[in-house]
Length: 190
Ligand SMILES: *[C@@H]1O[C@H](CO)[C@@H](O)[C@H](O)[C@H]1NC(C)=O
Ligand SMILES: *[C@@H]1O[C@H](CO)[C@@H](O)[C@H](O)[C@H]1NC(C)=O
Ligand SMILES: *[C@@H]1O[C@H](CO)[C@@H](O)[C@H](O)[C@H]1NC(C)=O
Image (tube, rainbow, N blue to C red; front, side, top):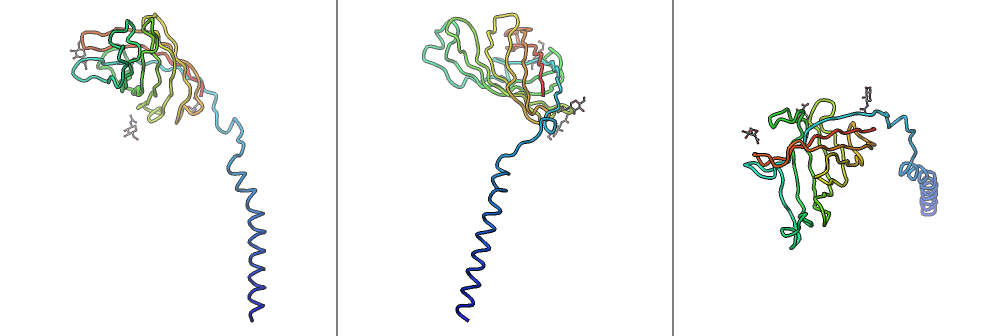
């Protein structure tokens, strides 16, 4: 009986080895496989306009200074200060206009000569077909200039594979409610 069992065992081992050899290429194929562009990219270009409300002061600020350099407060351009934001995005410029999303992220004062921000944030939309989808934004924002431009570097949900740009125009800067309101026109290919 002994030899029979051991022969059975070696046969099982042989089958196992063959199976492993047959199965492994498939495992590698699932690690990386190519998908046609048509399957994932719709090639839509969407224009979105909204207003960004940055409450620096007032009863309910949406901006928190989280870090700064020893010299930020004496710097003419606040160089070295970093803030975290969770700013409402609205349909119109009025402060009671319908909220369509939030801008969540950070901006830092990144220029030693002038007010110019490094902005890195996500727009999280909360309306209709865009609800729950995000756009990821990064760029340089010289806030005193009439029109600025930031890059759209990616997105999620309906904005998967997003690329594009946003143009920014200040409507009011530090109004009586402590708010800065900026018009955003976003052009995004996704
Ligand atoms: C909106 O603006 C009005 C008029 O200036 C003001 O009374 C009100 O407090 C503002 N609301 C917020 C949330 O700032
Ligand atoms: C957006 O999605 C959230 C979470 O799924 C849901 O609670 C909310 O009602 C939705 N809002 C709209 C306007 O569809
Ligand atoms: C692209 O546009 C078409 C037509 O308006 C729409 O049906 C489709 O859902 C859009 N795709 C995305 C990812 O938004």
